[in-house]
Length: 454
Image (tube, rainbow, N blue to C red):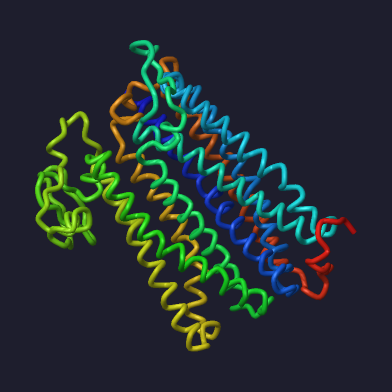
């Protein structure tokens, strides 16, 4: 059973981490496309129309991969995690139904108009389609985060049945939706998606600037994304602080694992280091009392340590500690990188700093890693619970699945996902190689024309 549990957790982690490359990118790109088309409507500058067309093609490829990789996890709930599926079916069923009605239908319904409607409808109608697709992507995130947050901080339910037949039934739908952690986590997820989308735009725009291709469009796209990323990165500081303060109340064991805090008392804030669970110490550089100050405004206020919890109820420390600090460290590096870019932008020499442009070309990896690390920290920090305080991960497994079955599916998914990733990279390369259309060749219609077709 231990082998099945480990392999099933690894399988789900692998499939969801691969999937989670694409939804944040869709949310971030979708929002930026709204800004780009909005700029075109305001300025009538054809370069913004060409820019929006180009990123629409990239968005469509990414959307397709996101849908394809997301379907797999719904099957895993039934095959590997049957007890869990029975337990949370009423809760997840409501959230996923809401996602289908309010998000997926909205997003997919307007996607064809977004991709193929450039020369068939007026600019205002196309802008509306872009807005609906962006909202659909965001609504999808809302309901997924609500469902996952219920696992972290269950609310608005009661338990029916006993043992393996127990299940949670919703008694208050809105209490379930607005559970104690959902809104904090939602803001954090959306901001992370915006940062990933903005850095993706800056990466490709920087590459065009270095190669002296599509220079005017790339310069405008880079500046637009830089402003967007800067605002999102600063807002992420506020969001992160609010979420950590909430975790201190709702999941104190998780926060203690994040900082390797074992004994109740004033808690240090680790800047860099690694935890040793045997000696119950963190080796590295830390600010004494720093976590206490951030949470309570006082360096000496006690913070509950891991030793306050029974050993069977404590999360592991090493993985949450490292992934949490990786996420935070990357977040501060994004702020620093944006500040450097704004300094050279203020001096009027941003696009002459080749070293900085090359940095932005590869910096797109950072937000992807930060989003992945944040997810790992949140999920591993919840252990040993799959539904916090109610259902243990070890009790949520299907009874009929063997380790050989799970291992075989991991190998199969590994091959399939490797091929999908290769296709994604190849298609992106082809579209980036082609680049934006020449603004002079883009059919122009007066944004004041409204909704009529040509």
